[in-house]
Amino acid sequence: MSITINTPALLFPAISLIMLAYTNRFLALSSVVRNLHEKYLRNETSPFLKEQINNLRFRLKLVRRMQFLGVLSFILALLSMYFIYIEYMSWANACFAAAMILFSASLVISLIEILRSTRALELELSDMEGLEDPNLVDYIRTFGRKGK
Image 1 (tube, helix red, strand yellow):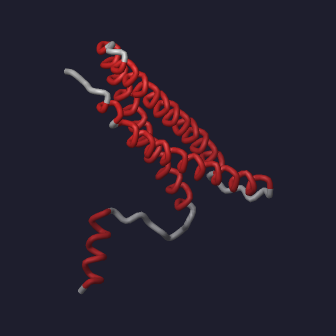
Image 2 (image 1 turned 120 degrees about the horizontal axis):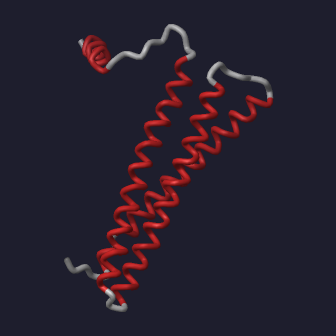
Image 3 (image 1 turned 90 degrees about the vertical axis):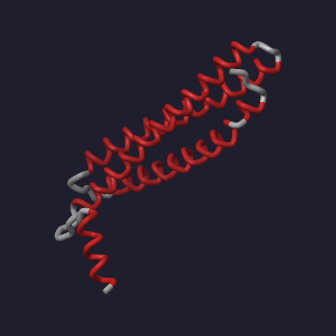
């Protein structure tokens, strides 16, 4: 397969947008950590404080890895363009393939972080008594009855 200089350039907008999303996640997590720290200093502990802290630490590690892989992917796409420019096509193909793999890995880690963030929200909701988590079928049945 032959690639042109435009091929790795196609990754730039995608990587840039995903890096923006990762930065927003990091900022949201840092806000949650600061709020949790304030509660901890005021001795407003919840029964799930240790689980929340562990979850936040794990999610911060995931976000750091997502950002790291995204930046490496961006650098490899740039290198691929450079190798195309100096006509080292085997190096260009290898760098482009590596950029795609790293970008994909970054997205997979992002999916894992999303799943963990929903776990964090479930922890917050779990201490509310009397509120049960309806399954999707029950929710649709209830919604259907309200519409009649």
